[in-house]
Amino acid sequence: MNDKLWDGRFSVQEDKLMEQFSQSISYDKRLYKYDIAGSIAHVRGLEKQSIITQEEAGKIIDGLHKIERQIETGEFDFDPQDEDIHMAIERALINLIGKTGGKLHTARSRNDQVALDERLYLRDVSINIIAKLDLLLKNLVLFAKEHIDVIIPGFTHMQHAQPILFSHYILAFYEKFKRDQARFLDTIKRIDIMPLGAGALAGTIWPIDRHYLSGLLQFTHISKNSIDAVSDRDFMIEFLNNCAIFSMHASRLAEDFIIYSSQEFSFIELSDEFSTGSSIMPQKKNPDSLELIRGKTGRIYGNLFALLTVMKGLPIAYNRDMQEDKEALFDTIDNCLMIVDILTKLILKVKVNKKEIDKSLEKGFITATDLADYLAIKGYAFRDAHKIVGAIVAYAINENKTLQTLTLQEYKQFAQVIEEDVYDYIDYNRSVDKRKSYGGTSRQNVLDQIEEALREVNGKSEHTLNCPRCAYPVKIYKNPSLTVDCIIEKGNKVLLISRKNYPFGYALPGGFVDYGESTEQAVIREMKEETSLDIVEPKLFGVYSDPARDPRGHTVSVVFYAKTNANPMAGDDAKDLGFFDLDNLPESIVFDHLKILKDYNEFRKKIQH
Image (cartoon, rainbow, N blue to C red; front, side, top):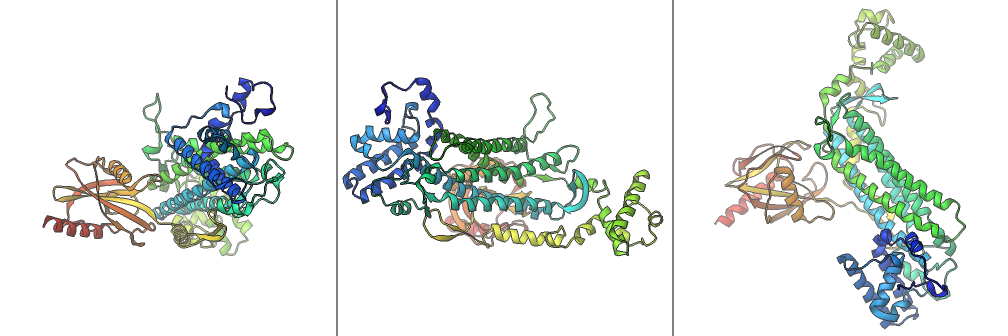
């Protein structure tokens, strides 16, 4: 029999079906780190106020650390009979250290305990999402910069509207995702409020020092009302709303890319890495990554509305209904993080088909507005000019012509003021470059937008925030991105790849270090992806950190060297590759890789002597 820690007033055991129905340990166990961190702070607070002895506090804290290690190593046995992560840890503590463990819950309720866990957890998750959005924003800007010379039809109502720069279109999503990042940042203010000490709803008779606890847990604010502290899930709903808005933006980008990658458009082509095939139709290349982003957005919306629905009719203070907040929250976080990661990787691997896009510019009379502006400049009221151009378009449709192929004589049938210079006005390139109003699609505007965006993503602009790790307002400084490169030798030659993405030219094979990955793991992975080579025990050569080394932004590269006898194959970002003599390198080497190779050549000569 597994007695409940709360079953003192009950005369019969809980029904097994009820036990299964009410448990949350199967999913809230992911809160274990935060539950233990909150418990350790609580114990220190009890010790400070002499509610428990120093010896008891030390014994409890040691036990909590041991339980944390057991969970991390997979040794901990999660029992559904414990209901939730709070009871599981407390029971394990009592089993481990005896009755002293029963003092842990003095001056605390599960009501303020779970509110604390959720706030600690969401604070960290928010910071993680903000950091991941930094990478997505950076890749969007780089993608826009790479395709600055591509003009596409802009659409309204899914009809050809006006010519715009493809880069301008991409930067529209940069602005959307930047607002998403700002929302997550702002919500931290309302997450960063400490509820511990509120008890079940009325506070506690014990002389706890909530300001001391807040400092230990590095909260900026303390809840002012104990009832509100345990009944509030506004911060969680706001966070879910942020996720819903972000996923809406991601879904709109996904929808556009699905359309643009269809055979009817062929504006872009997705990388094979983010596409799938058909079980019956061998020719198919399906944009499943984008379709899943679109589909998961509906799921994220559902989680938001599920929690709103749970909370809408609850009497004030804690109710067990609020247990249902976690699955919706965890599911949203998992999917939101996955969407950010997928888009971040996918965007730089999209192939833009300029030839197909150029063909589409000839459809839909997309410089008709320019023609109306031309007539307005010549003296017509714009509404009259609009009507005349409408008639010209109808005529061109009947004659199977475009605005560009109509003769001057045909134009003069509609307005005698039209002269030879009209063809300059209806040229696609000139149409784009004339739109110089702030925020418009002219090349200079977009180049300025890209330059400003690069300053933002590379940390030359700053956000301010009350730090979740201390009680003072601080600035968030953006860190350089960590990369790896590898000098691979075969005989007396080194391997270089010809890059198919910006910046174009020859480079050492390499790439960015993923979150949770060591540099050694990253270089082995990148070599496999870019060259198909399985390198073994790469050796560290050096670290290169000049802020100007990479035109895409500030990167720090950990450079390795290795030898091979195998034949590489180009993959991932490599258009082509080959081995080159260190004394006869190609001219167009990008980044600071020429310096790296010169340093390596000197290093090699020294060790040979």
